[in-house]
Image 1: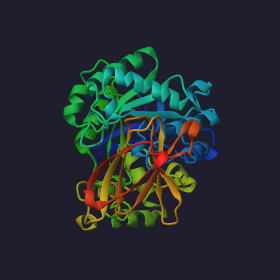
Image 2 (image 1 turned 90 degrees about the vertical axis):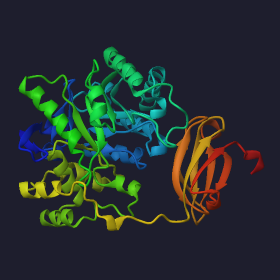
Image 3 (image 1 turned 30 degrees about the horizontal axis):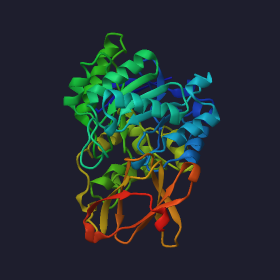
Image 4 (image 1 turned 180 degrees about the horizontal axis):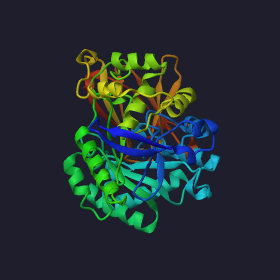
Length: 424
């Protein structure tokens, strides 16, 4: 079965094959999930599971059991990823590439933190992902960001994204990595990437109905169209969208997600008796975009994967969603809470540290990890909130440090976490 979808509403089309050969459940086989064949001849579904926002072992495992065959993760715990728990789930269900189940394996994509840019640093980062994911080779590795900015990195990287790209090309040559790519690409960066010996197989950019990234997408579509025209595929690029359901707008000063509250999207969803995510996922796929919605709920995972192509948006509806580009509703912007504090914790203890928020009932809620000395965790929190820091490993759970947020120290704060267990 072939599905021919217009890209960007400009009258062009791409052929996206049904993913029946990738999944064994009857429901999956009937779901018409579009797929894309990468330049390395590996075919992947256009709907995967995102694992930011604290999607952890149980959620990853439930997604795989429901039929997901693509999982997107990353090395950064401070951005809500838990790469090692993805690895544990894959190991237990025997869905890794090396489990000799190539028609049923789960394609796993990870990302290298920008503080690890550089040739040697990237090689070390690859080994970290191999260990965490419990594999001998990696399906896909992306550079998470092409540079550090603000307080994102706990230390200056040793090199540039181009140094990292050299290391990734060598990893492809050796068979250690099958696919490589990069996130947050503009046309200027794409120009440089296209001069490389191995050009990017995957590009992942912010994409949602209000932020459609048309300039880069149209260019990638043009590249892919030329490849198809000449019967080649060695330079085709898969465009992936992150935050496709609108979560990025919370970081842009919005109190509510404008995608999930949009009246146009709601009216279309009500017409077909589906959810807004299902509408957006189909629209994105039909515009040539792979989506990676993060979800902890098995029911939401199931509807995102299996129900997003159970109905067919009209071309008029597709164009009406296209028209939302660049028009997020301004009335949803929020005023900054004067008690809000952006805080960065830096691990100055020996070994890995677990970070917990102490809620109103004195329960400890896990919010992230700092894996080694010098690693960081960034949070937006509020005056009066308390955090505790505990050891991991052999001394699992031993209290190291406490911290209570004080807004008088400023709206942006940095604090070092040291072993003060004897004082507590």
